[in-house]
Length: 156
Image (tube, rainbow, N blue to C red; front, side, top):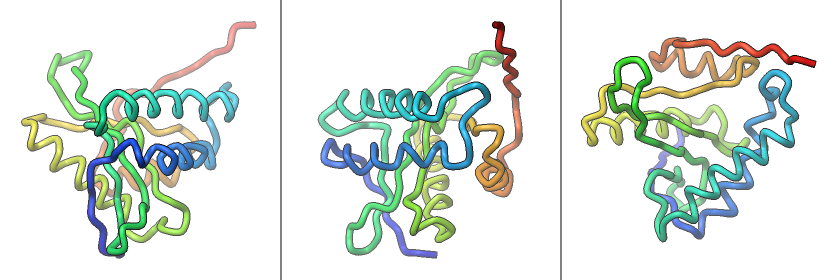
């Protein structure tokens, strides 16, 4: 496991963060979605969060001891549809390919829990593409449970 620090993102991290967005479709895109369309949509949402503040308040960067950026996590506070409880939501999490399997994702996920607890939020949600078995397995190993499942039928 690489030693890692988690720090708030700044607008200077914009290029690094956006450069990782194509990783989201490396394991396939959601049903009936064009990978380029998925990349553009995710990049637009992240970019909006980055430029919203001088220091983005909900995006955090994992860095090594030399300050090299290794990955990021984008956190939000949402309200649960069913219970109306405020909770943390991991909008996006990704690690650079060469740091994959080095514990960076675990460090970012642990940071999300600390972030949520500091805000007195009672649980964390996230979404994973159905075909991304690696991510789904990773989240399960960390104690996350499958919640709702979304279905799609294209009407021609």
